[in-house]
Image (cartoon, rainbow, N blue to C red):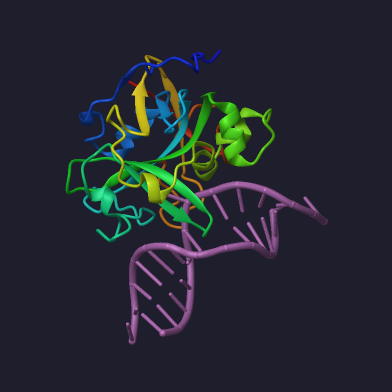
Length: 227
DNA sequence: ACTCGGATTCTCT
DNA sequence: GAGAATCCGAGTA
């Protein structure tokens, strides 16, 4: 059973991840992010929204040994992807299809790009707020709230205007990644979803069988041990 | 200035 | 499983 958190508690659970955690290649960081907490603090509200990361994808920068033409950073820095070339542990939020957002976490040392896309999280607290943000009934199933990169942005009200470039490793950030001690020992690596290029790279990582994971349930993948 | 495609989601059939 | 919605950013000129 997922650990429950007191929505009224003033202190956030666990601890912030160190920046060094993200100053590595995205394909190493991505599986290690599974099981970590995503915390969304909203000004004027006592209780933050919290969710556990269950599905991610790695996108490689132009200096990586493996070319990744599916990555936004592949052709080098542009105004849009500037955050990816900055320090690690920051939010790269971009808009897609004119109506949605996706959120990534920058990886690698400053000057080098690479990131991890958050594709799905398991809601832990603030589910009614998430449902309201998504325009769903307050008793909507958890997987309808945050299963999908743009669904989770909508549920947590993450936008490019407000959150692009935000430091996810600072205690005063509206969006944080934290480690509450929850341990994931293995995951499944599969091809990434929704891309046209580099479709063969196995850079999508998820908790096998988790109901909040997005996408087709029958993707071929290989088991990966974590830690 | 102009074109084109997109790391998606929802609503149908 | 297919098609629509919908617009920003990147590339080309």
